[in-house]
Length: 195
Length: 303
Image 1 (cartoon, rainbow over the protein chains, first blue to last red):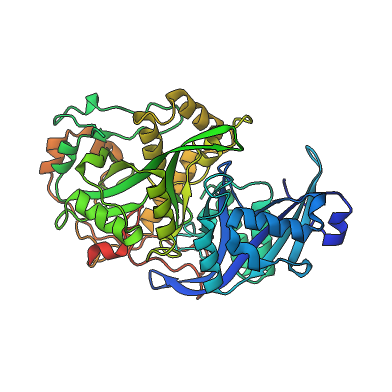
Image 2 (image 1 turned 90 degrees about the vertical axis):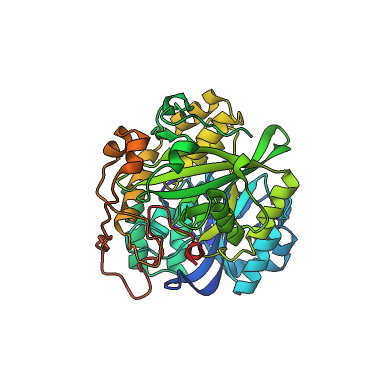
């Protein structure tokens, strides 16, 4: 999916069934090499198709609600450790709709945990049903930019992403205040130039 | 598994990757590599893998689980790092680095697979190891990795490599190869998959060809490597045998191994050459202290 307008939950629901994915993050006080502030731990995953994406998936009408479907998907992908996550309507960050080649509606959520809770989630995820199948591993997103202007977030953004995951990541990092907007724009630009 | 050895000067007998679109690295025999002079840095990395009888969606054979990792710099790579040969054998050095990260595996010379000269002006030889484990052992490593010292710092997470290609000809290995890799990692991955017969050669070639259409992966990784190199600060505390002699890759490759071994050490202390693209804020764009090369050393290696 390319660039698209961000819709509200209600607007997007009217467009039909779709996908729900979630960004899970936690404040992270550590420093890389004792010097580079980590700021936050933000989770993404390497998917079966070799692309990076967020946990989540297609929401069935049978799920009852977007959130119920999302929580179900999170349990499958992240294991029983995801049960306490209980994403709710209030965690909805925005939705996107792409029309070509077919209509795809993608809802995006974000939830902040404590670092301990996030670490427990990473730990449990290796034992999840989908581990080694739909999910090839969880990764944290480097939010810093190293002095070469490339290492860290810019390089991370140059990897292969599923659907609109890359846009969703940039949107969330900005909206949640995890990375200053100017830095996000620079990182985005640097990654597209082929560094 | 059998190491791919050859006698000194018999580099021509060593297998090559020969996949169109992937820059071929010059192979060395272990013997030649060990005779390189003190001006050379040695890096050791390992591919841990296990036969995997599972099927994705109940129909796509997984064949093997192969471990790689997402690094602090946003690149995919293998576990390992630089080995200071003044103090450690290759295997001891590698095990030290792996022990810090993974804790559970000890590699031996029997796991040695190959050595290659890296691209770029720095004299680095990359040694590669491959060890087959049971799926249970590999899974245990994934579980341990989350608790390792490096987790959330040098290593952002372990990932398995999809070896299959889905019907759309992109899903799986092709897309995976379209990610960004550190230095020699992508070459070493493809090389190991080929020589260990884990993926048929034509499938590897198809997967690489599919990604060429999407973007220029070679350009991306090469540029990132170069940027990281120019951003180097080589400190005395880090491996002192790392040189930044301005020897071009072509010059290095042209010389036979025994001449390289006798070459006088031309040491130039690296100056931080990188100019930040923009004025770094207090929070960001600080350079890692212990990053001597394109591939950063595991910090504790120099303890």
